[in-house]
Length: 450
Image (cartoon, rainbow, N blue to C red):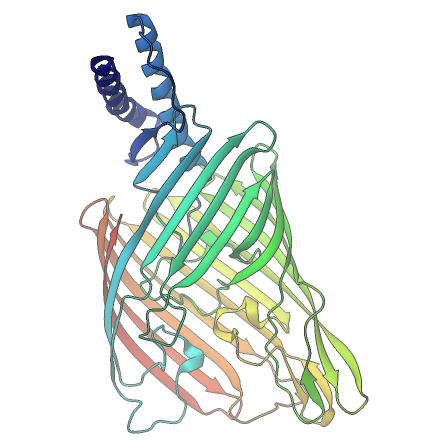
């Protein structure tokens, strides 16, 4: 019996190698993960005929190919998204599979002739008043390295169920390398439950940058949510709507004070995609939010309506060029504009009447292009701007008015798992009193995926 067990194990490993070899023909690109077949059930040792062994190997091959297909079809690309997993563990009937992966990323750079007071290139954090300490700085950072796991269950009742979690090391003060949970959600039947990138964000509408922040008019932020998405018209159209935990960042005075929020934000979108693999799309998005605060003068709670609209997309004009863009406008929507998150500009006291509070109008747009010179090499560049409008004047002289973000970079893949890059960034910040500061940054990156 021991000899038979060893023979069956050898045949199954041979089947594993065969499945990987033949599975590559059906896979997109050069994605070929290592698939490990595991069994969670013990059975009595029995004797198999040669035909039964061949049938078992064929079923195992099919399970492994199905596991690969599950991960291809549920892989999400776009800004700050992880690569496809290198390792997949699957049961022999493909009812359950698990992938583990991530990357180690090291970047180093220098600010000259003006700095950004941040590890990331955030125009909001450019000093507008120059001092002896705002001329140059050195940056070295590995906190954007990532770990993730993804589990897929093929259920008779719920269909395909996806569980995903990922983390980086940005949970504490800069340089502390405290782990931080980014995403943690379960997805099934069109619903996403948990923590994920906000529904207002169009993940593939932004270019690839070394800079972790990305274009300042983009809107990559996380939220705890209940979301529903559905595709129709042969998957060319997609509709999504969500209820998300609100993040309010306003300015208060002696008349107003914060209170706990009561109503979720409601973002929604409608997207149209085209091309052989739906590589191009345009999307219209909107968000409505109700922000609560307490009026100390009247002793009652009050609320302010925030709203925003966005048009975004990416267009593959030809094999070697891809375009990216988004434009957003609204009032009181700082969580949905990258440069303004946490800025206290969802609302401010009315400069003409301190007993009144008002939402702030704001807008931004970004446009970029990527040029794919070869399968391993691409260049990209773009421009982004964010603006906060005056409303009854402005609340403070040093209140943010406008930020600009300009970038150019080059990425090269040394191997399928390792890539290097170099990038130049230029940014400005202008305040309401027209005080202005600027910054220049040059940086390089090495990233290894596993």
